[in-house]
Length: 208
Image (cartoon, rainbow, N blue to C red; front, side, top):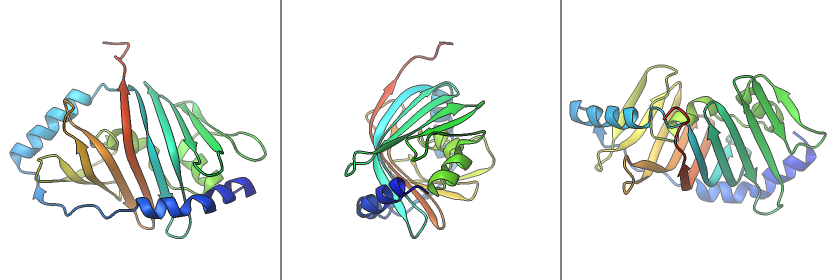
């Protein structure tokens, strides 16, 4: 990791620790009624691939971490993710799609690679399930394999387990139709990813 990014990570660790609020207890197994409601949500959001998401992000590997405000723009299979440090004012940008990824803001210049997750781990030491997170941030199961769901008293997903990750949903925006998560906490020990969602902006898909 570059000296610049090491300083960014060290400076922002207190904010990350403050963000790691324990998730609420998981309550209900997915009976037929709850799973039917979840399936309806997934069908309603299945083609949602044009949006801008803004909020705060915290990551940790159990020893080191980083955090900041972020914006995530999704246009079909193309993405643009920008993380801004609140203390140093530094930022980095991860963008790309099926053809590869570009990580900018690094000391020494941009870094390219075929896989965004591997690129982030190589440059920053962060393990973030970016491919699955595109579905998880909407409160959906990813299409990467089997998933287990538990539900809260609000009948919305409280915990999702998939691909070795445990994803907790401590808060939902139930005023939306369908509801969307406000907090997404993903963990695969020792790695943790915390998203605090402040705003969504959706655009119609070109196919619609």
